[in-house]
Image 1 (cartoon, helix red, strand yellow):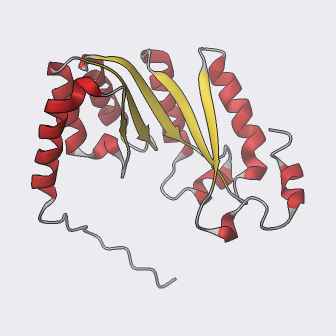
Image 2 (tube, rainbow, N blue to C red):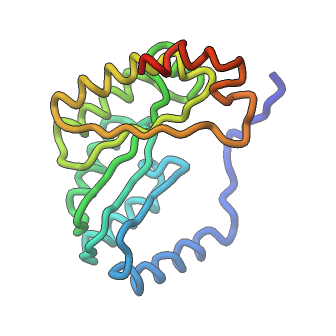
Image 3 (cartoon, helix red, strand yellow):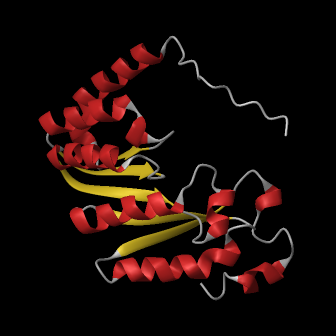
Length: 193
């Protein structure tokens, strides 16, 4: 529909130097942090994440390492990241997986989501790690109707071990706000969830 997505994204010229400056800062300050949040893009595909995990394998830190991911990486890549995470000398590792709903609509309103791949990767983490696991959902007019199925899925996973769930409303796009069609949308899934 006229939207152009470039096939190749040009990394800004200053990116390598900015990355090096960040690692120099971390080297001096890692022991003063309580928590280190790794956001995206998608951290599990960024090479800088591997550099960070190598750094944390050599620099013990009493921190909670929190990685936000959509889990849309190959199973091989996920296993590589998990092995590197296991060598990180941190007090806790938390994976925050982005998932707004459960069902066919979930793939429609979160671009790039393959629900079966997400499930395989999340269940790998659930059964093969002791990482704290959290599902983070963005409430939109599209996701609310499928929330009950997501709650069912999270409850199923939580029978193995605790899976946390956090919710937030979409910001900056009023046309996606959960109540854009009126308050009755709450009765179409939110209350049940």
